[in-house]
Image (cartoon, rainbow, N blue to C red; front, side, top):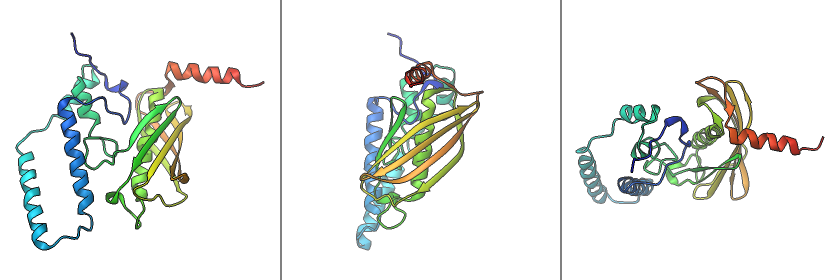
Length: 238
């Protein structure tokens, strides 16, 4: 059976496919490293214990350094021409900052499409603290950048962030389920305009607007979303 191939421009943003056995182990390692990082913050341990942990961490680092890295140039090159493998997709997606399940810097933030809405969920621990007990505003800005970029799953072409306008309405607490939501507002040729909200424990903490700029010509709705939009317009009362 011929293995399925993948094209970079068809990949859903901020999502990783089912892991291979190797990727499952990479994700498990990343979660352990993330948990270690969380424990290190204001760790109440004596000098001898800290020295012992440092030696253990050094041994792990030296062990990891014995292995090479997959070439991102090669991975991206195969995906750009539509010849990427399942593992190439994982190498591209599962290390994304904040959303990558194999990235120890990631909570992770989970993103998915729900009809014409982008939804997200995360739980931020001590490593993401700004004010005492609260999530750093810059972390939320990064999460919103990735969330709103995912509205490009609804259009043809991909682009880069042009403008982010973020209003912080209330503090977002740590260790609380945080819910994200974004919508595509409109397309203006090469511009995609989107809005987003953040809620924590039922309280809206952030509102945001963003503009994305296409790098490959004008944005156009994908056929399935164009049909949905047209059906919605036809159903509106005159």
